[in-house]
Length: 141
Image (cartoon, rainbow, N blue to C red; front, side, top):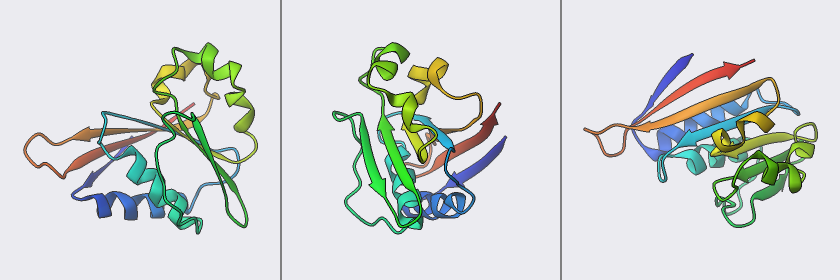
C-alpha cells in the first residue's frame, strides 16, 4: 500500500496525472470516499493526462460517462445509486472492463463484480486541515 497526502484539489489533480502515466487498456481503478473527498477531481486528473479537457462531472444519474482520447477509451462510473452488483451486471457494466480504462466511484458497492485485479484508492479527509486528503492506494489481486 502507498499513501499520498494531498494538500489541495490541485495536488490531487497533479497526482492523478502522474498516476495515469502507467495506465493501460484493461486497468480498473476503484475510488472510495465520502462525498466531496476528491474522487471526481482525481478522475479529472486522469482524463487531463489523456488530453480530455471537457467538463468533467460525476455520472451520478447516468451511471457511466464515456471519454475517448486518441489512444484509449476511458469509462467513468459512479455506482452510488446502484443497489448492488446485480444492478451493475444488468447495465452491462462488466463489459466495459476490457475495452478501456475503467474508473469506478463508490466501487465498494459492486466489489463482487470487479475483476480479480484492480487498484483501489481510498480518499480520507483530514479533520484538522479542511483541504487535506489522504489517498491510500493499493493493488488488489
